[in-house]
Length: 227
Image (cartoon, rainbow, N blue to C red; front, side, top):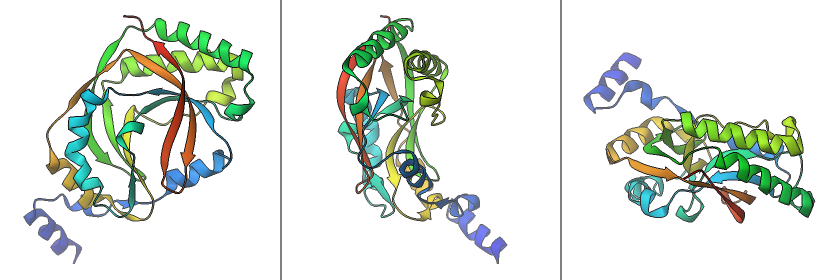
């Protein structure tokens, strides 16, 4: 029976293995374990220029908005995470310590020349739909430098969180589903890619909206790379 199903998928132009990829709320479950509901947390984000990324995002929006088991991230909150400060709520970081953090982060960012990454394609994974950012060498170097700078203040345990290869999440899973057919639709939606300029990053105070599965933030500082 499986062989017949695989032949049917091949006739439809789909990879048989794409039909058997479960989607679940693993990421959300993990997030709830490490994020008290009344906390906001300090993060370092790369926030893309809307003019650069919007045409690519628009190519996928119609598909994502039609999927019942994911929650789209609004355009104004799209970001790539470089670092998270765990173990302390943002409100509990004293003003002088926050000022020292900004100073150290700015020095670290200024050591890295501005660079460009290619954004896309969209990939449906276990708990999200995300846009890849490649190549990741410069992004990883920037992430390592700001993580080291923050770790000098909060300690290495507070900044050890890693979220994999650089990416910008378009939607988070809010229920169970199958990423296979979804990935086929995403792949067929566009061959567009978006060059993104990374010339600054942002220290932000992040709130998680667990009901809508969205990340929102207050911007605290813009940190310029070497230009």
